[in-house]
Amino acid sequence: MASLARRRATDYTVKAISVGFAALSLVLLAWILWTLVARGLPALGPHVFTQITAPPGAGGGLLNAIVGSLIQIGVALVIGTPIGLMCGTFLAENGRGTQVGNAVRFVNDVLLSAPSILIGLFVYQLLVVPFGGFSGWAGAIALAIIIIPVVVRTTEDMLNLVPIGLREAAFALGAPQWKVVTFITWRAGRAGIVTGILLAVARAAGETAPLLFTSLGNNGWSLSLDAPMASLPIAIYQYAASPFEDWVALAWAGALIITVGVLTLNILSRLVLAKMK
Amino acid sequence: MDATLSGRQAGNGLIAARKPTGRVSDPVFVGILWGSGILVLLLLGLIIAMLFEGGLPALREFGLSFIWSTTWNPVTEVFGAGVMVFGTIFSAVIAVIIALPLSFGIAFFLTEIAPGPLRRPIGVAIQLLAAIPSIIYGMWGFFIVVPLMAAYVQPPLIEWLGPLPIIGALFQGPPLGAGMLTAGLIMAIMILPFITAMFVEVLESVPPMIKESAYGVGATTYEVYRNVSVPYGSTAMVGAVMLGLGRALGETMAVTFVIGNATRMSASLFAPGATIASTIANEFPEASIGSLKLQALLELGFILFVISFIVLALSRLLVRSRLKG
Image (cartoon, rainbow over all chains, first blue to last red; front, side, top):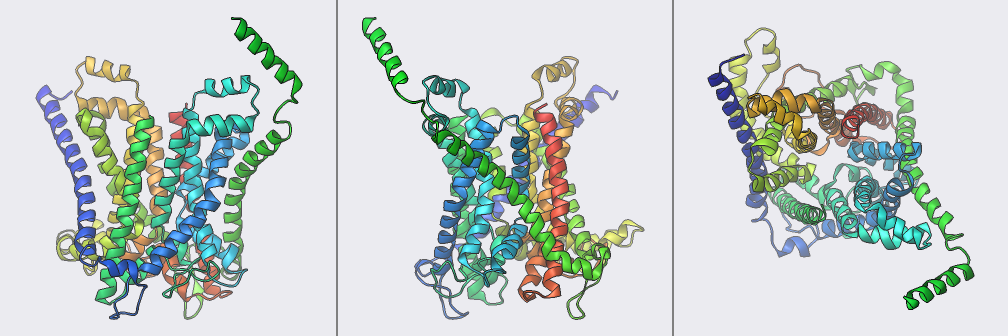
């Protein structure tokens, strides 16, 4: 064994490197955020929120993209949340220890990390090709498939935190299972479940790849879910890769908006979760 | 006492008088719960089936050699996935190689070094790296990292390491900035929080007793970390790395911005390349419904799904075996 002095020196060196690595990751976070603020803030103004996308040089904002994103996320939530909530409840209540439960949990974990671009391809094959075109519906359903695994995972985790005794007490009073679940377990885990939904929104809000082949994007003003629909990430993607300076500036403004929104949702939900645990 | 008794009796009477609750509603509710569970199972099956079916014509046209053929020529309509499969795995492995030591260090910092009150805020800040959308990494990579790589990182590496035998092959070509290494670097930052979070979770599950025994015989903090904590959680930690790999394999937007999008194969870290995901994102707009190109892209998607599925499934098996077992 090496001498004590050498072992101490190794210990200090590794500790110093570890501190350095942690500092590096914080610097990277700060660097990305700083880039967004430095480039996005000058481009941010009321016009971004009041005008729709326009040809290069004609000004314009991101209103249609922001509204399109909100609509698609809203519809995705309406579709995805009940399924995710029910599936998460199934895993925590009925599926515990069963073969089906384990299979569902496994599949959900895979879906949680599966490449999101493939969700886009899947919805393209499922809805866009048979129904003859890109549409807001297709985009919303692609986002719903992104949302479901996140909600399932957090719902199951949160319901597992609810003490068994609470359920047993309700059952002992003769309550049927649907009452126990809706009035007792869901209510006890409410804050956590809502957090999961917030996290899912944050995840869906930044997703670009699943929308490329589903809602496609739309440079005009359209609220119809049957037509191609604009979305903030797609607008950013188009504009950032364009050669026009004003478009690139708008892309940075959009990037700043999305990131601030997503990070706020994340920090909020982490605060709630920290309180619960 | 009397009141309680009579209350209880009244309750008994109530129960006896009423039909058992939930006779109809419960099966319906339980049915919905099971149904949504099955729905998630079906969803995965449907995704696999649709991607397979969509790519089948391309597979028929080019045979199994589609998977390794390195020709991708939209003009002559000859397609092969070789370059993209290579690019996907190459860039993801670069990402893991960069992220792994960082994760080991940060996990060490968060579990052993950081003072108590700082642990959570720093841990959360690092987790926020995972929350930033992929397209933001793409823009940051494209506008900030690529020029830096081209100006300051790649030229000296090419000059110093390029002439060396064997490993020199990794450092060839013009310093374009965009390319495999840049893509791997950006993805490393993106998967770092996932790997770190799971490392921390595993390390915190190491029983304090065995760590204390090592300290008791005079081991340093690093020695305990390296010889006790890490070996104890090694299975789950391998699983965590696989999760990072799985995420990097399917990363799309960030990679599309910085990999250079060239459907050529090169062993150089600096050569522009393509991954399956970036190729799908880039070439899809030029593929019309029913075209051979679209079918080839769908087949690419199917291959990516199979690769990620295997990696993610392995990851999960390894992680669960440790944490639950």
